[in-house]
Length: 291
Image (cartoon, rainbow, N blue to C red):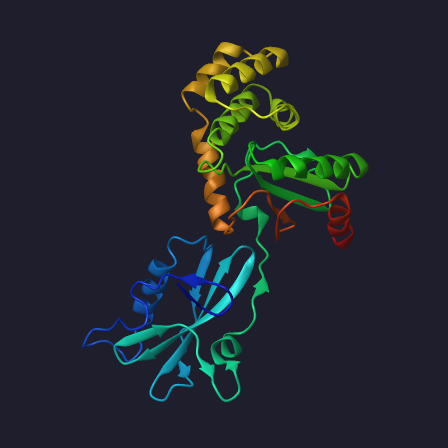
């Protein structure tokens, strides 16, 4: 692996010297460089990649440098590619006499990214709290994630203390590779919501409170019992669950998670400000006061 400035890690395959130009193309083929960078970062949670189409002289004689930016993990990170004729180099340049990282110096520091909540799919998603509250929280979460379970406590306390000031929206981000039942639990929560909007949050509280569920058969029995307790049409509920009828909704949430470059749960947007990890009540109230 070779790290570009700002922490972005790019696979070593194809890096070092790489042809990007044809014989008839301009001196700097920005389209080809951008396409290469997108391919090189395709397996990373990059929400957006922007190439600054203005080549500058580089510290290496005979080479130009072109800056690019990626949005990842709530940060806008900067990097450089070095261009010489038909080839580019990705990596970092150091000055041995001063020990300075010239690439990092030229690329610039990373900076936080704010996302427009209005661009996310929040249709028919019942918020907890006041939709007109001054602090809008969008939570990307996973029903099998122990850190999400921890996070639910302080969030509940915040809403109890400030019911008029906060709106909380839940977005599904099941990490199926490590939580094999998370996607099924997301489906069950949405099948409940289809029948009764408030059932979503009842499901949320119930399954973040109860002991962990270890297999699919146990989960199906637990959600059947929960459906009966909620007064839902249980046969209809189980048909929705078994057929994956709410999968498109979960996929929209996963697409939104990719859009903001989320990699872990829980991940939050506080009025659009990206924050990852469990937050204490004190931290949540600090966000509220700041808004």
